[in-house]
Length: 300
Image 1 (cartoon, rainbow, N blue to C red):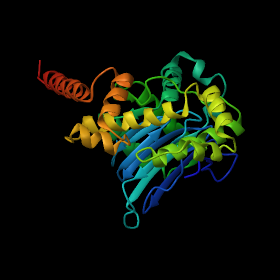
Image 2: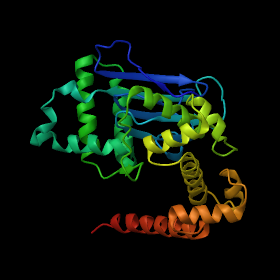
Image 3: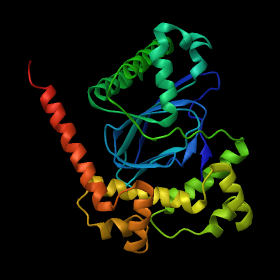
Image 4: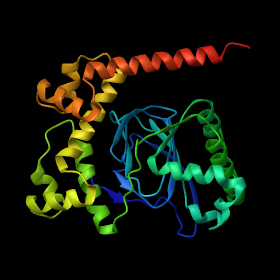
């Protein structure tokens, strides 16, 4: 899987682009582009990759991403024709003019676009409303589509149904050459992090010796290649612990670790908790949230 620059629009003069996608599986590589992107998964399930975040996705997944955040959606397997469908909206911030989001009335949207640099998952009733509007806007004239997108962003901006995908902003502010080179490495890791990875292969993708690659990668990303691999594996493990009943040993090996002792050590170093401790805390939080929603639903 090779990372690439993506341009979905049919014309460079278009500042807003809507498209409905329908495939047997999502085959877009780990890619990036300078536009904001709002993606609705109409039908499919698998893994979503945003920066260094790994998460399960399913039908109804709705995500807003800022510029130049590498991302992709990968299915669990190739299905029948039209088994993977999505609506994708890409837009440039300057479409409304340089001063537009500096007005008091548009302040919520400006804040939203800033948060989108970390990636945002949109859930709940807000997701349902936005999904219906995105379907409607596919078949309206360009001017109405522009106004509709602005209304969508405002609806998201004033909503509480938002979840940050990355805990910290991960800005990929580097030259086009460096960005393309680093994304090839991320793509290699994404494709293989649950299996054995080789420093030699990563260095080859960057057209460098192993020693030069290690220095280069650390300088650009502020982490080692091994740090990156471990980060993906731990986040995958967290996802399994939170959303399955698999034993720690199963989670360990399915996440790409060779032995349980090393897995436990790395997991605690990254998360501050043991795998079982992490699962207990997650389940407790989930139960608390369900309880809070139940209480709020009681008529006053």
